[in-house]
Structures are given as C-alpha cells and as structure tokens.
Length: 78
Length: 260
Image (tube, rainbow over all chains, first blue to last red; front, side, top):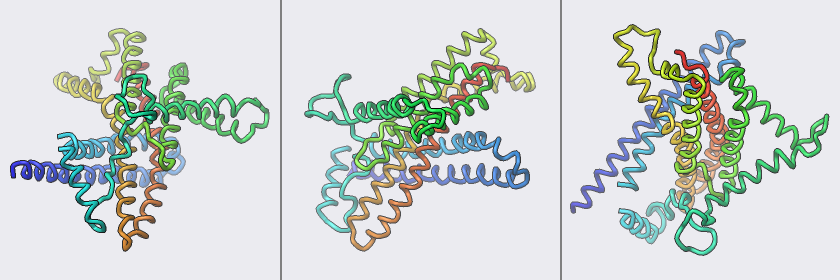
C-alpha cells in the first residue's frame, strides 16, 4: 500500500512536470512569432538575425527540456 | 522501482491489445557491450563507442576521402564538405568576430561530430550517442573549460568584468553579479542537457508511437505519426547541432571580449 502511494506521487509529479513542456512551447512560439512579425516589417534585416532567433529558441526550449528531465527522473530514477 | 516497472510492463504485454506498451520507449538507450555480456569497463566496445567510431569515420570519409580530388570544379562530396566548412566558418566569423576565427577548427570539429552523430542516430536500429548526457556533458564541459581558461589567459582579471555589469546602477551590481555567476555556471548543464534531452525526447516519442502500432485499429495513425515525427527529428537533428555550435561561438565571444 505504501509503495502504491509513493508510485502515485511519482506519476502525479511526472505529469505535473509535463506542464513545463507546454510553458516552453508558449515561450518558443512567442520568440518565433515575434521574429516573424519583425521580419515581415523589415525583411531585409531578417536574414542577419536568424542566429539570434535560434539562440532565443534554444534558451526558451532548454527550460522545457529541464521539465522533461524532471519527469524522467521522477519516473525512473527515484 | 525498476523491477516494479518492468514487471508491470511484462504484465501489460501479457494482456495483449490495449494493455500498454509492448516494449519500454527508453530501452533503446541502454548501453551494452557489443561482444559478449561482461561488465562494462573503459575499454569495452559498447554500442555507444561503436557508433561514435562510425561517426568519426564518416567525418573522415567526408573531409579526407570526399575531397581527395581537390578539383577546381568540386565533385558532389567535395561540395558538401566545402558547404559545411563555409557554413561553420561564416557562423564563427559572424558571432565570435574576427578574433574567433583562430578557434574555428575546434568549433568545426564539434559541429561535424554532433551533426553526424545526430543523423546516424536517425537510422533505424542505430544508436544515438548524443542522446546520452554522459556524451554531451563531455562536449559541453570541454567548451566550458576551454572558454573559461581562454578568458583568463587572454584578459587576465578583466575577464571577471563579465560578471560586473558596469552599465547597471551601482546598488544593483552585486545582485546582478550573483545572477551572472549562477548563469555562467549553469551554462555547461543547459548546454549538454539541451542537446541530449531534445534527441532523447524525440526518439522516445517515436518509440511510443511504435508501441501503439501493435494495436490494429490505430496502427495507420501510428505509422503516419511516426513518419511525421521522423521528419521533425531530421530537422531537430540539424538545428540542435547548429544551436550547440552557435552557443559555443557566443561563449567564445564572451571569453574574447568580456566587457559588458
């Protein structure tokens, strides 16, 4: 019985950590959307800023990956 | 706990259709020796080291054998090698500046290794070496140590100016210094976990959908989903290598010009 409760906690925690993926998705969409909005206003400057775009996306995405890692740790390492 | 999940998985598999996954989606990342099944020592040839060796051989094949003609009008393989060279060279020049070009060979090596490891990992039944944090952590720690040592060697104590934001109000600077210091030491963690996590997540998702393919009614959807995600993974394999390389360039720029 106690083991079941601990298991339940793990699964709930892993599911909650999944919210982080959604939050990261919002962040990445925000970065890409704002880049597109800026790029359509000044298309000539867009090509030079793609590196910045990918850096921004990478930083936003890394935190989502952290939440995925937390979920994995809860499921398999605890 | 591990045995517990395995037992549950086996029990679910016995139930047949609709009883959960037949195999575990993370089984593909198990490191095992290629020959025999003894304990893994540092010299044991495992599937990880085997696929890393193939990665290195592929890079050598592209750069040495592919460009052996040294033709004025390049052959197909020579064009690919030249394209990769030019792509990374321009990236280093744009992000790190003219001073950074000196470190181009290191960054080019990193890029080629990661991009080849990612793409080789996409071959069915292949092993994705970069999905292991142990592999990417070595790459990221090497970058972190290189950049830190380089910063102190080139700039001396001025390198600490990276943490002392001179454009901020004086009262805020100690707080900002702490934040900058933490973010500096989190760099190798996020650098490695980003690459490994992205690849591991993508490959695990493919396996999860592959598990659904065992149920006849949703098998077509599952096959379509695998195809779509595979396409996404091809994109991710390149973008993550690109991101790893460009972040290396950004860190290098910080070491070369630490003033805020």
